[in-house]
Image (cartoon, rainbow, N blue to C red; front, side, top):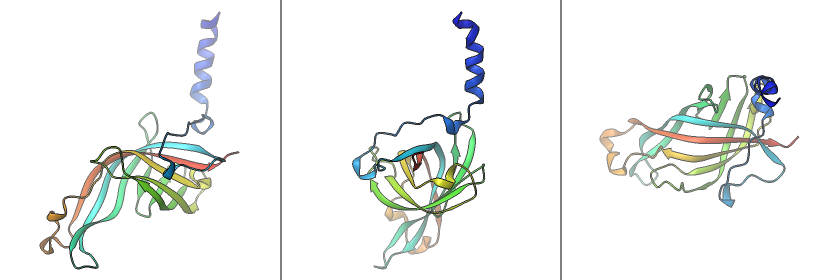
Length: 176
């Protein structure tokens, strides 16, 4: 009897929009926890690069400075659903976009990875999943660190390097 209804259950699961599925909040340090009253509306996996530029600092010493991320956003099936770029900003194939500002960070458990972040949204455009987003978490980072400081010299001023990284982004909006 149960096998008779299995194809119907599979069909329902296939046509249910991803936004209708509940995504659990990740376990993160308190410093980057999103307040109660907000729910995860999207989880995306990013693969790409952190772009660094060799520039002199205020002290005159040369150092690698983050210019921008450049990453594809993937859904849970691995399909490309959007892009992450300078701003920081994220846009999806549904036409929605959110920009933000980092408000908190913690070191990644992986010492060879960029920090985990909490970002608050600063602006939106388009209508879609990201149009209501208030906060974004960047967690589960791998890679993305700047090259060694000794590799940034006057001779390399304005040189850009790409550091491969991956991360998971959790997008939050007020609970409905």
